[in-house]
Amino acid sequence: MTGGFAAGAGHDRGTGSPSADLVVVGLGYVGLPLAAAACAAGLRTIGLDVSAEVVAGLGAGRSHVGDVPDATIAEMIAAGFTATTAADVLATADTIVLCVPTGLSEAGEPDLSAVRAAAHTAAPRLRPGALVVLESTSHPGTTEEVVRPILERGSGLRVGEDFHLVYSPERIDPGNERFAVQNTPKIISGCTPLCAKYGVAFYGRFVDSLVVSRGTREAEMAKLLENSYRYVNIALVNEVALFCDRMGIDVWDVLHCAGTKPFGFAPFQPGPGVGGHCIPVDPRYLESKARSAGFTFGTLSAARAVNERMPSHVVLRAAELLGGRGRMLSGSRVLLLGVAYKRDVADTRESPAYPITRGLLAQAAEVSYHDPGVAEFRVDGHPIPRTLRLAEALTSADLVILLQDHSCYDLVELSSSGCLLLDTRGKSAGTAVTLL
Image 1: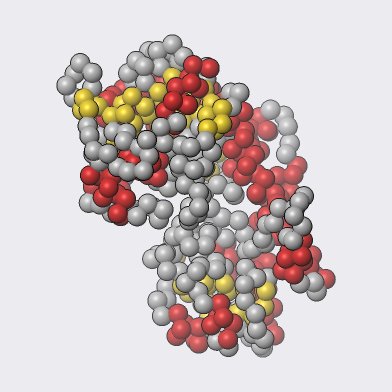
Image 2: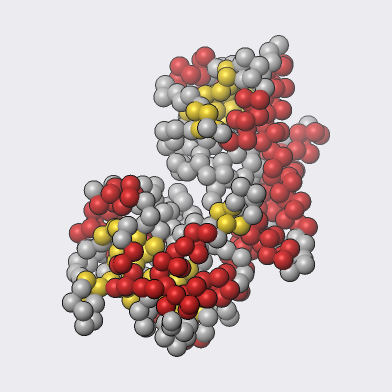
């Protein structure tokens, strides 16, 4: 049932009020693509978000998520999609999917406050027969030990008897034009076998391939393993890069050669640090749950130590390069190219640009940045000047640091501009270029 947007709206059985096949709670980088896929499959879909600004923007046809263009929002609206801040819409839903953020507290510990708040909001509005799905990434036990009790106490209903509860971890990869909701295999797990069947029936309407997990804890663990795998392997190549720098070995050539092996090797790239909404966060959820069970993930601890070392390494390399020109970081004009956490996205969450900028400012450098997708970049409340005229900025900077190789950057032009360039992505070449 995919391929186009179908208009139509139903009514809540017996009440005469508008009903919804789906209410998506949280319209961010996970929830909005999910709502778009559901609309395209003909599901009557409502979006619920706590941000009045997000809701107003969607109502006006403006998307705030890079992977969902304005044209798609227009198609969704034409198909009957609405966004609201009014939680009462949950009472009309056949299916409720929670796509709220799961980040870290100021102490670096898992923060499930948004999940708990969403569950508390849904519970008194849950109607018999409804399906509730948690897509937010969290540690094993969250669905059964956190969400389930809130829903049962607040609704007076029983999971597996009166309503159905499923965990299906999101697998959104911002900026990935190859894989989206429909063609990315979806893990489905339920608190009971019947719950899982309801989850399969729901996602089967707009996802091509479904993978049924033995239980919710296995599905929760699978999601953490996926991102911890990336975290550990990034740490490995980061440490290899540090060693190669010490030994005078070209790490990029090492990676190119190793990457030609057609089996037994998965290529990863070193960089200035680890950023984003998942990779630096999810291993913390796994470590925290392990500690509560009296277990220590030594591999994750070691990986974190390496990855958190990379921003300071970039600052050190910057000081060394300027020192080779008879300058100090203090008073030097340093231009950062790409402060987003990932290529061709506008998201700065957990970006290594933050600790790198802190390190540069601590050395009294004059820092500015260029990033086509990031209109404002603040570090500890301090606004970092943004340049829009890249060519002029390159000629006036004492040092340019390529943090993110956005496709808008002409790497040949950067290499030949004559500016002193520190390339943390290994994409440039030239006498004035230094690789990580």
